[in-house]
Length: 140
Image (cartoon, rainbow, N blue to C red; front, side, top):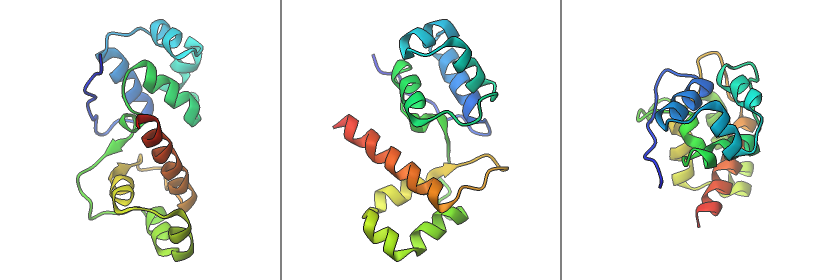
């Protein structure tokens, strides 16, 4: 059974993971077992002791909770505001052409909001784009 994930504003990624886990009635131990991870690793992510989990770890957690990795990040409907890192990527015509970035992908990247103390770079958005495409490929 797939859950309809909620979008939780003004929360860090770790707080979102914890809230989504609790929404699904999962304990740390149950999530750890389903994701094939250590309970302590998930706890560290939720409590932000491990600031940057890799994409494979996030994919395992998302799969175990039957949601998408994107649900761990804040999104906004306000498309007018764009992070400098995304502006830099879109202004780099060579890289934009090489990556063949679609309007749908641009809209999705615009919707991602990082915590106020993080300044995503152009490289951050390239990584996000690869992750997005990889997740799209898995769904097909």
